[in-house]
Image 1 (cartoon, helix red, strand yellow):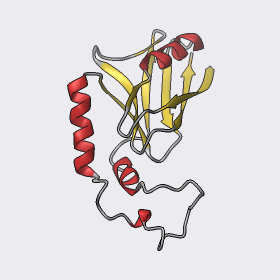
Image 2 (tube, one colour):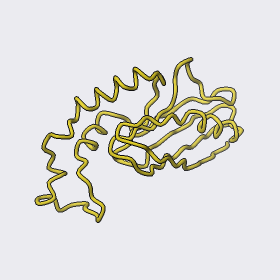
Image 3 (cartoon, rainbow, N blue to C red):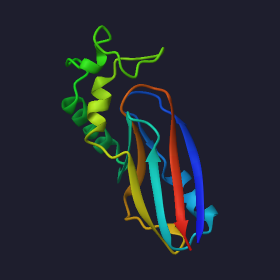
Image 4 (cartoon, rainbow, N blue to C red):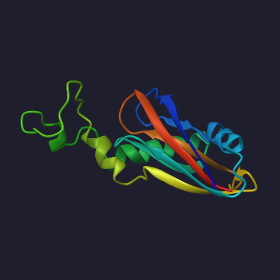
Length: 147
């Protein structure tokens, strides 16, 4: 049994940025020498998501617009009310209730099959980190295990 782990770091550029991590993850799997097994890809954040979808520019814009409709930034969020909120506060606290609410609809991780040394993907599938908050550094934990 082979188990390999790596933490990937990304600096997102804006809210709702889609970071295509596929090539880095494919290389990680190839370098691991795992021929058959499973791969997990996990966001280390509560306001960033991991999805598998198509990297087509109009589709990505459609998804961004959908995100804006689902969790409007201008709505009231108790999480953003620093006069009332007293839990899990830090010095760099920002008003990001919309990001946390949107994250409830999206996965924080995916599990993918590794077959014959490669991620078993369809023609258009890609792996994305989605920034749900604002530009910042993000970490993604990837682990492959198998034979």
